[in-house]
Every structure is written in structure tokens, then in C-alpha cells.
Length: 261
Image (cartoon, rainbow, N blue to C red; front, side, top):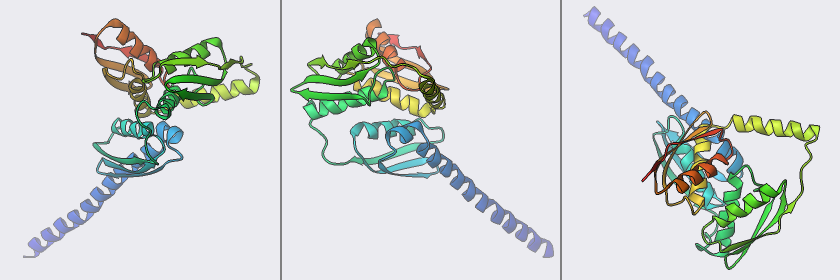
């Protein structure tokens, strides 16, 4: 009888020790996921001022709150789904105010701003975008003629844009010592970008360009090296997708493995 009691006590002790351990492990696991989301490049750069609540339960993530633009919801969605450990996502993010009507001037401006924001070889923040009945005007500053022309090219590839008048002023930037230091710091930040954010930026970029938004492209990233897979109609589509993806923040190289149908 005594041995039976001792056996039962041991079983109870093991159960007591193990159950809290599992709870703590699950809690730590979800805490790490929530922390990774909050500290991702996408959330720090594009969602830092938005009202977003993140909750993870055994890898099942729920996002609630509101964002200013529709592209922010898409970015958050793709970034979280590509984060290691995330098993599923319920994205209940809403937008502040009413969304602009598709193909309206307000909608076109939003699309162009988002497109320019994701590309590193244009001045997305310093470019003013105006639109009247699909006729777009670009203003601001560019560091070179090539950057100015690329801005036109990207704006023209947004759905609903009929033509672009580029009034951007070219002002070459002199790389003084302090600016060189700033540039190096920026490069360091880019190198430390998480793969989930890079994948989200590439996927959203391809979605916002009308030349690639209908293509079924699978994007994956490993240490900043992006791999494109899927089926395209011709070599031109394949090359364009690779070009657009290569100009996204954080991308170190492109492996274009898409198949031509």
C-alpha cells in the first residue's frame, strides 16, 4: 500500500512539474512570435504609427486594429505569414476612413505612393504625386536623371495611369563624410532586415505593378536572397518581375526560377 501511495505521489509530482513547463514553453513561443512581428522591418518602417494589436496562441496569430492605407494591411498579412513559427493568421485589420474608389485619382495617387515607397532606387518619400483623370504629375527631387526616369517608369506601370508628366528636379547629391556615414548606417539596416519583411515587400511590389499583378509568382527569401518561382507567359514577364523585385529594399540578390509557359 505504501509503495502504491509513493507511486501516486511521484506521478502527481511529474504532472505538476511538466504541465507548468508546457504552459511556459507555449507562452514563451508566442511571446517570441509577437516580438518578432513588432520588431520586423515592415512593422518598424511602414506600420510604426498604426494602431495594431498582435496576439499569438500556439502560433495562430490574430491582427486587430486599423491602418491608414490598404497596402499596410497587405504588408502585415504577407510578413506575418512568412514568419517562422506562425501556423495561421486571422487578419482583422481595418482601414481608417473610406477607401478611395478603384481607378479614381485618389486611388491612383495611393497606388503610386506605395509603389515608389517599396523601391530603393527612387525617392519615394520625396516625390509628390498628383493625378487628374488619370493624368499624373510628379514633383520633387531626384539625385540623377536615371532616378527621375525610373520614377516615371514605375508610375506609368500603375493601373489606371494614362500618362505621366515628370516635373522632378535633378539635384545630384554630394556624398560628404557625414552623408557617407549615414549611407553606411542605412546599408547596415538593410542588411539586418528580416526575410519575412523582404518577402512581403517583394510580393506587395509585384502586386502593385500592373505588368506583374496578374502573374502567379511565389516569393521566398533566405538571408536577403530572394527566389521567384511560378509560371509566366513569356521571357519579358519573367525579366520584368526579376527587375522589379531586385529594386526592393533589403534584396541582396534574385534567383529567378520562374517557368515560361
